[in-house]
Every structure is written in structure tokens, then in C-alpha cells.
Image (cartoon, rainbow, N blue to C red; front, side):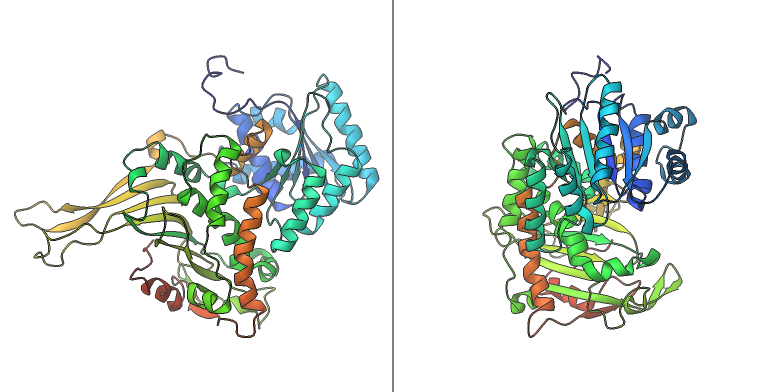
Length: 509
């Protein structure tokens, strides 16, 4: 620990621990988790003495497992791969072969962890990361409990990170919550949402509550509406169609990522920056969402769609129903737009619009806050009046930053107005790129900071809202229709009409 930095850190100190990753042969481990841990080591953030154990069913030796990790880390690591750092880092990684339901496999895992603890001088901190397929979540948790691995040794801790999807509806989420809480205490349970680890998402509270120019305007008196957009130009490459058919855009992205961003935008100031202080305010937002609990309300406030064949970056792409592993009669949405209302004093009458779609023209996630127009009596006589209003744009990815659009006079002898932007980019302002989301989240879990992880009640309240929409689509006698749009366009015209009923339109990305 650097003594000159000790008073500057804002989190508890991360202690040495053993990290067990279930589903270690999967893409998440190779592309995200191991590169994140390696980059923490590069930055000097990973505690000395951390050991990483990959747990999976496939037969592999330590050397084979490490070789596969090294090949992909060279391609995806944000800081490249320095042999001087990678060498000592990869030596901390080992592989453990076992079925997820085999008690003997967990017994031998416990023996391996005890040996590591003895080597480390008795420090028995353990972090279990469940990165397997969702159907194994229950089995892994129950097996950990049966093996006694959920119980922390005196003076130590034992925690679990559970990947998304956390359930497929309210009933399954409640069931999984019950299994988790029968295995680990809620304070030791970390339901991960990688969007909350993105630098710009973390900066939302700072933007609002540390800048006096924004918070007084952050209410229905000054804000017309707010948009949250997650656009993806990819389709169902890599066999993703099979997963998407069982999930869809609403459950895959809106229930977790986008409702989490919504809660950060709309929350009240927390009493403090503790994990529960922040999460108490976030869950109030989700609980205050007006429920679209009938097919009629869903039809009026939610649009679902599928893309048809078109072009992305000049390349022909198939329609959703022609994608690999997608049914030709599929009723799964690859695009969704939702109009939301938050029934609180701060946000009364302010519509929030969320949209997420595949095969849109570009990849981008952003939040745009649209302020009400100023009285323009001074400029009514000008040709065209005042061009648009003030918009604050928070770019989550890929170009992380914040921009503010305002109106300015064009230089010259005549009075002509034009919108201009004040732009802030993380990379140029701070001279370095932002760390990957999983880096921050893994370090927070090791340090015991759950602020950026979802709590049980957050997850269940979000599913309660989503379930009404899913029921209207798939279980009602008169489901709302499925809209269509050409791949490479910005979505169906019905989504445009969703905003037009309030006199608004989607921001052009």
C-alpha cells in the first residue's frame, strides 16, 4: 500500500483473497474477467496475494487454461500485455475440473482453498464469481452451501458475485434471491450490472450533486423530457440468436442496464455515499414507475419491433427472422421503446423514453436531458426563431463524455442563431482512457463496496414493471402488434409516434 495514497482512497482497502470463477471456460471469463484482473495488476490495484481459480466441467490442465487466457488477453486487454506483469499474474491462475453438481468437486475445491490460505498465512478471504449459464446458478449456490464454502472463517469474508440475467421474470428472480440469501448474507451478495461500472454512469451522481448549476434545474419545472438510448449495430452473430429468442431486448437490456441508468438519473440525493444510502434512493425510483399493467396501456406506451433485411456500413444483413437459431415465426423483439412516467413530485408530468435496438446504424449508449425552451419573445421575429433547446448529453459508450447544447449568435453583422456544443471527453480531459467496467466492479467486490451492485429489492421491483409488459405481449388475448423496421435505420415509425404524442422526437445520435 502506498502511504502517500492512503488518505486519498474513497473505498475500503482491497484485501488479498481467492477468486473462484464458475464457468471459467466461457467467453465472459476470457474476454472480460481475466483481462480486468490483469489490468488491475497493471495499475497496481490488485492486492498482492490474490489467487484465481477457474472452475468448469471441461477437462484442462493449468497450462492449457493459462494458454487460452493469454491468447485472448493479448487481443482484448486495454493496456496490451506486458510480459513482466503477465508472467507473475498468470502464475496466480489455476484450473479446477468438476461438474457443477458434484460434491466431490467442491470438497477438493475447499481443500485447494485451505492450502492457499495456509500459504498466505491463514487469510481466508474468498470471492465466488458465478459466470456460468443461468440454469446452473441454483446448483452452484446450493453446492457451495453444502460444502460449507459460503461460511467465512473468523476475521475473514466470503462473498458471491452473480451475473445477469438474474431471473427471467419476477417469480424466478424471487426464487433465485431466496436461494442466494439462504447461502450468502445480502451484504455479501453482489448482483452485477456492468453498465454501472462504466465511468460515465458512475459520474452521474457527481454531475448532479457536485455541480450547483445542474441540481436546481433537475426537475419538472425545467426539464421537458429525458431519453435513454442503447443502440447496437450488431445482430445475432456468433450464435447469439438462440439466447436472444429466450430473452429479447426488453429482458436482456431494459430490465437491468437501462432501468439502472434511469434510477441514477432520477434518484433523489442520498443521505450519504454508502452502498445502502445510494441504493435506497435508486429503488424508490423503480418503485415509483407508473405500471403499464393492462394490454391497452402497454400498446399505448411500449413499442416492440424486429428488423428486416437491410444494410449496415454498406454490407447486406439478414432480417431478424432469417438469423441463425431464430425461428421464422419468432415473436421476440429485437427493438423496444418504452415511455415511462415516474410518479414523484420531482418528475410529475416528465416523460422518460427508453429505446434499445439491434441492427441500428451505430453502436452508442447515451442519456439526453432535454430542457424546456426559454420564452423566445425577444427572437420571435428572427427567421426560424430559436433553433431547438438546451440538451445535456451523457455519453456512456463508446466515446465517454458529456456535452451541452446551447444557442449562440453566429458571428457577423446580422442576428442569426445557431446551436453549439460544449464538449467534455474523458480521454482528452484526463489524458488516459477509462478503465473497463469489470475492473471497477471486481475491485469494489474485493473491497466490500456494493454501491454499484443491485440489491434484492431493486431487482424485484424492476421485474415487477417488466412482467406487465411481457404478459401483455405473450399472454393476453389481444397482444400489441410487432412493428418492423429496415436494418440500418433508427427503428420503426411506431417508436417515432410514441414521442410525437407528447410533442417530442428522438434525438439524432
